[in-house]
Image 1 (cartoon, rainbow, N blue to C red):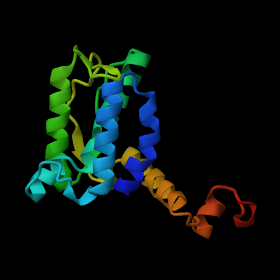
Image 2: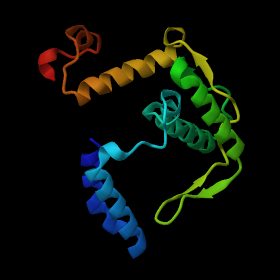
Image 3: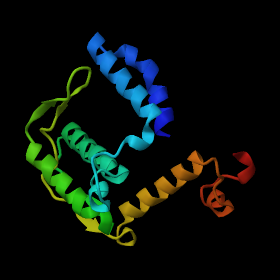
Image 4: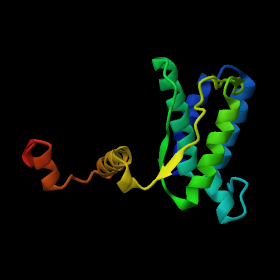
Length: 171
């Protein structure tokens, strides 16, 4: 998958603003596509790998989206409820604290990259709860399950079609 991603990104390198950026990024993408198993992400053990897991990378986007929405609505974030997962929660808590400390700062992400405004990062620490104790977490689980089924091109169960008011033969 990494090889395909790198090869898909290579044609977009031409949109970078300067020759040196295009040279560096295209070289890195070509190397990564040819050597996907050489990328270790700088970790040597399971605990360190959890710090950069897709779950944690996605959590950064969640925090950034919460910040954007709270800013747009001019509302303070009162609570962030996160699914209790022993292997990820410590790292998620540390990441939320890191972003909380960045609150009020604006950052430049480098040549060809956007700037980011950390001014509205949530000040509250995440609350970790089991999925069955939070309607919101259950809704997220259902949404992710449906998205996964669609991505895998699998149909939804017949009972789901009845609940949603659609007949199976209607698509």
